[in-house]
Length: 296
Image (cartoon, rainbow, N blue to C red; front, top):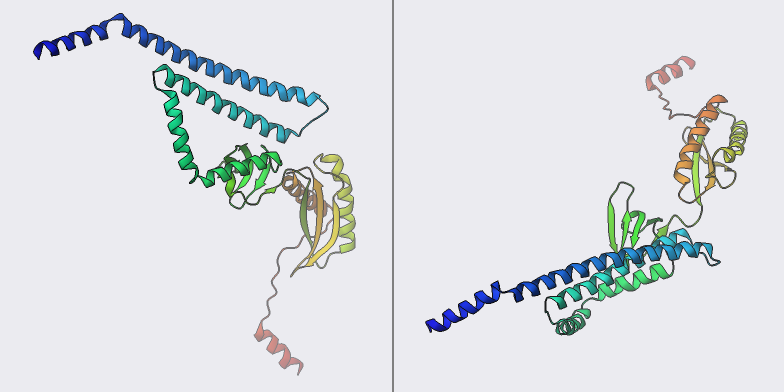
């Protein structure tokens, strides 16, 4: 028994210290490094090819919008990365003498079993496909869903990333996106209300505002035409409210609305037209009684 153990120990030491093991390990490590380097260069070269394809497409007769182009480029780059990484992982496992065929067969059976319970995942993928296919929204669009609002950072087959203007990044499963409002497709409308005092001349105020609106398209390129004065919108407790609308480039209605308020304030001040502030009239019951007694 002792001789057998001693023989095993001697053979193990010879195997560990022998050149065959270290040559095999060196080849394995070298193969893994080569696989990883090839994967890196394939991904880098593939992304460059994808970008060049879309650059050439811009010069062709069939053009797509920049929004849709950014979305497709990002999706294709992600798909290429996943495929190359998966293939590299399989090759690394095969290099370290793990039976890949048995592993894939087991994964296929396990995937079939998991698939029955992965209905949400399938729903996310199908919804993501139709979002991209129907061009419902694209990378760079400003959208609003039932749970979040912001600029679309990335659209994948399973999730969509929306970045809020405060910096928060919302990662939303595509299957949960039931309704989307896209602010970046069509021109926007800026709506501005301006108040005029009841004592003021409404006709003159409207004329002053109309003259100002005619000047604005030459100074602000975001405007799509001359802003329109609709007229009296409402009669407030201490003011008459006039409403102005202006068609702008997509997503420019907020800055244009701020610009309109500033321009209106400056022009009305120049013309001596008062923008009223809330007023409170107070009556003294005691003084009112004294007046009644005096008149009687």
